[in-house]
Amino acid sequence: MVNAISKAIIRSLNTEFGEEYQYGREEKPQEVPVPGFWVRCADHSCRLFLGNRYFRRNRFCIQYFPETKGQENEECCAAAERLFQCLEYLEVDGDLIRGTNMKYEITEGVLYFSVNYDLFLYRITEDVPVMEEVISETSVKG
Image (cartoon, one colour):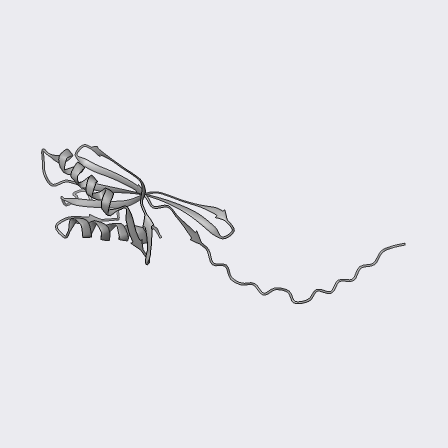
């Protein structure tokens, strides 16, 4: 599921920003092509909710490396505003999921944008045949 969400994030970024930007989602190389985005799952947790329902919390960090030297903050702020719009809803495996807890910070000329994609999953269990008949004999002393 994490891979499907990160691919959907990159599709949404590509739709919003276009082909002139670079996109990646594995380990960041030493020299990142600018302008570019780097997507990674920063935090992932799964807990049993009820029965066969599981609650998955997925926090993603999107790093943006601006092109303009000397005006990084201005370019990062403009990109962050566009990220709020394009990452609010993602289509993953035919379903829409909503991004929550969106926030960003700019450190040393790089934008760090985080967003949560929390969802419930249902685990399908195998049907086990039920016993048809039980015969029991008991006896009491005395």
